[in-house]
Image (cartoon, rainbow over all chains, first blue to last red; front, side, top):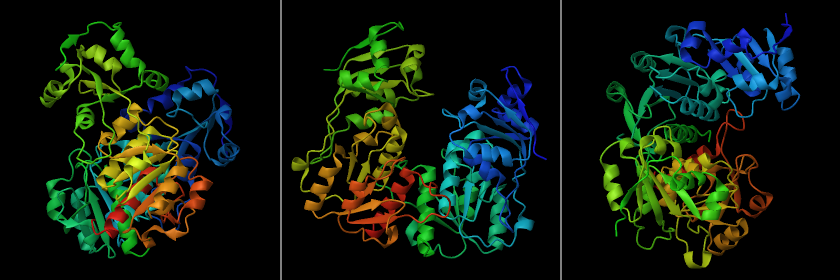
Length: 277
Length: 277
């Protein structure tokens, strides 16, 4: 049931106004829709989940295309594959709804999935390591963290009490689509501790005032690494309930490493200890 | 000889136009001046170099201030310390020349130092590790790399054949001022190899097609890590002349790790091997 391609020629077309309105969180919330721009991102969003995967499925609502912006021929192949209405726009209008400096002519609108972690359904967890981010503030940082977590083979990412919308267009963009390929869920910090402890995970708080040098922690067992927000760090609850706390050595100022960088370094040390890196 | 504070009240003041013009590289080149915004950045730029340091000195040409934008009292203390003419602007005009969303009321203009590596003067080199970036393209990436290199205790950063201006305002900003505290120089890739080999450095090319897993390299000797540009990677010359080539394991797609992240992971592995991390 491939949708027919409908042409839009006017800036004042209600569909154009509607998709632009999704740049604002309150509109995304009201419509329960979000915005996926770019070939790679859309392709990842419609990839079939691996068998047994706990990933939330993405359902495309519609696709906006502008063949004048395509960078190659794969864009058309993707358009032929999607199972939703397709709207074709002239470049000038497309650029108006795009989030990018150099759009590649593809923007999808998808239904916002429920990303709440269902601990009961998901258990037992067998992933190592698990990455937990408490209250991340900057969409671009979260995207970079997801991209890095994918590289490091992280099995599960949990975002607790986020101050940002997981489906913010800048998360999608900075994640280069890994938002759709990594198992990533939202949970409360209390549920994270309750469930991971029950399943014998070692929960390591990573914080500048950590007690142990990160390389001296035993990461080859079931490990979960817990990072705080850019501005406020970890909550007291998180620090007090962790099994141990780790720090990264730093020769410069306390903020020499940003959140994503700290995650990457810890995750690659974990790979090394697991003899995978 | 503290400069007197001169008030500027008009958008059309030639000083305002002049400082705005420095946002463009050709004007920075013509004037041999660049732009340092922010308390932390300016403070680092005027810090005295440690004894024996090979850092280029920064000479401030003038300072633009807007007390309405100050975030605390340290801004005024810094203004009292500088040794150059100071121009005071109303917030509205200051915001026009600022690079930031939330300016802190301080912008300095400095003379562009000569950052060319003087191999003769700098030898022998005793730093471990040395970080070499070949042809970096994005100012923000270079800034993040410098910030991370400072955290990892890198002794020397060499940028070869840069496609960007080392003193681009976005390098200054993303480096959070470490551009002024880390020894960082520009050289040709040929001179890098010639001089580092003469001094018995092991030069490791870090590249997705590297031959050796990065953790299996011996990094506790005199090591230099060589990274390519975001888009083009390392040149053939760099690959062919390196002593060895290293790769980072990657579970996702080839571009899961960005350039700065790869640098951070390698540099922290080097710290670990040196028993410093």
